[in-house]
Structure formats: C-alpha cells, structure tokens
Length: 447
Image 1: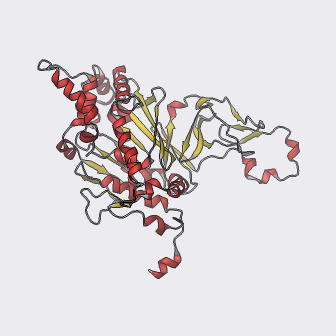
Image 2: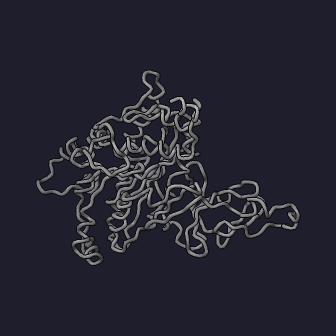
Image 3: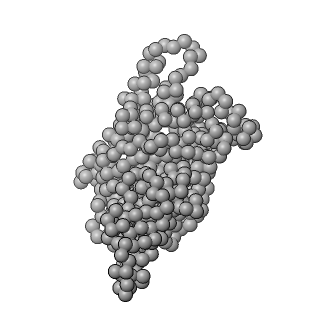
C-alpha cells in the first residue's frame, strides 16, 4: 500500500466514506500504533487500582506495554514496562506491590518507582565505558505525559503534543457526572474487569457505541426474546419490572426513542448518545440514595446530577463510559483484526451497595463472555471483518444524516440516529494519524 505521507492517510477518509483498509490493513494498524496512539491521550487505568505506595498495574497503551505505579511521593507514574539494559519486561503480573523499587528479573538492575536508576550489580564494570552518557543510565523511561482526572489516569506517549484539557475539552463533563454521582465525589474500581477477545478491528467496537440503528435489529433474538417472555407472563398491572428487565428491555426501543435521544459530538473525536434521555433513564430508585446525594450536594444539585442520563460517551480513541451505571469499556487493539475488550465497573463511594450490584448485573448481562446481548454485537463485528475482505466494494458508508461542510471543531447536537459521531471519529483519526507525518512536497507542488 505504501502509506508514508499525510496525503496517503487523508486519501483513506472522505466526508462520508472510509476505505476498508482502515479496518483490514496491517500497515494501517502499524501506523495507528506509531502515530494515533502516541499523539492522543489514552486511558491507562484508575488511581484506585494503585491505592498504596508501590502498588502497580500493568497494561498497554496502543501496543506499548506500560506500568501504572504509585510512587513514594504519592503521585501516579506511568512507565514503559521495559528494562533499559536488555529490554526485559520488569513486571509480568497484572497487579501487585513492588515496595520501594522495581528489580529486573534478568540482571537485577533496580529502579525507583518513578523509573530512576537505583542500582546496578558490579557497577564498577561500567567504569570508563561511558554508560552515564547513555539513555540506559537514566533508568526506566516514563511516557511523554500523564494526567489524573478525577481518578482516571490518561497518558500521551509523545513527549510533545496536544494538551490534556485541549484534547478533551467539554467532553470531560461525562466523567464529571459519573464521579459526581458519588455522595463523596469519588469512585473506586469494583473488582477486576470482564475481559473478552473479539476477532475484529478495534474501531468497529468504538463506532458501535453510538450506533443507535442496530439495537432493535441485532438484539432482537436476545433482548427481544426476553421482552416477549416478560409480556407473556401477563403480570398484574403495576407489577414493577425486575432489575434484569429494566436493563435489557430498552434495547428493543423503537427508532423514534433513539432519534429523540439525541447525539452530542465534541472536537477531537469525542461524543455521546443520550442528550435528552437514554436506555438508563427509567431505572428504579434505590432507597436512601437520593437522601445521601441531597445531604452531600443539596436537593437542586443532586436532582441535576441524577437527571443527567447520558447513554454511551466515547472518548477517542478507544474507551466508552456509562455515567448512570458507572462502567468503562476499554477497547485494546492487538492487531488489525483482534481486539481485547475490558469492561470495568466502579463503586460510588458512600452510595448504597445496591447501585454497584445493579452495575455488576448490567455488566454480566450485556458485556460478559457469557452475556446474552454482547454476542449479538460480536457476531456483527466478525461478519463485517470477514465481509470487508470482499472485493465487491472498497468503501464503508457513514453517510446517515450527513450534511455537506460539517464542522467537527465545534460541539453539535443532532438527531440520535445520525452517524455524525462516526464521521467525527474519523476526522480525529486523520488529524492525529498525520500529526507527526511528513507531507509529500512534490505531490503538493503538483496540485
């Protein structure tokens, strides 16, 4: 294919179509890891995963293995998970406590929890070699920049680039609402995530989060069956729906419900469904919760917080959060056709335990490997991944409710079934893919 300049990347995306290579090409995937995931702010974890000094959690940003660790000064650091000596991974456990330093398991080089070199066995063997002038002598390398926002840890691999506040802008209001739902204004990770491998490109999962024209179709066999069984039970009038039915029934809402729901898009690829209402709007009230919120915020503020029922908020490039049920899904790319999905849930500090129980139920029913809904989506992703290998057509259409001259550098609110958020994501995809790529000067001159 030969994608070496900005023009090569720009040619893959039109105002309402994207070339199939963005989902299938190994070269595109390699460039995404090199440019897109380096130039954007990518989710790493939550600070409640490393509550104590020396606590660490290993994950990856793009294809780069990293360690999130609580340093001795109480700050959260994000380091490349690589010894500067021979390249050995320093930590192989998913989580743990390293104490006051990391120690390489190969040659016992040791490092402070901020990555600084602490000690080398038989260091005199390096006398006169110039080791102190090398990158290796600086220790484990830290990522370019780290920001902890209300407990959520993000990293930008590139040492220079767009700032955190500029990248996210007003989209941070969705994180604010999720955290503000705690009377204490704080979240804690509730256990380990559900992990689920998908044989498809990571962007398919991201796009699906704001695709509101598929639920009543793709989930008819699961949610539709559950609704039909409930209706056939002929429960007495006024019988409250069980929590499981409250969770699954809205997936079968008609097109009009999703149209009126609305979609809001923000610059840099972020956006959310559920401007006016969402599938989470009609959940039963949890006893004692409003009282706790009113005591913490006052009645007016508490009512405003709980009245905001956004559906799915996409934070470009690869996470989605659900504020009303305190969930985050992380779409970790492992190849052009392989994605690991992590579904995390959070506890609202000082809120009734029934809330995290409902969130856990939602996660099991919708996102688990054993779920009855998530498999519908997976079937569509994998069919699409296979179908895109067909030579019948080379372009993928994202034209629904398209308007010529769309401006993705401004916030917009539109019909809830628009594909504008998908177009917004690809506008950002081109922007950050090409941020550090050269232009083709000869081609530019010819044009």
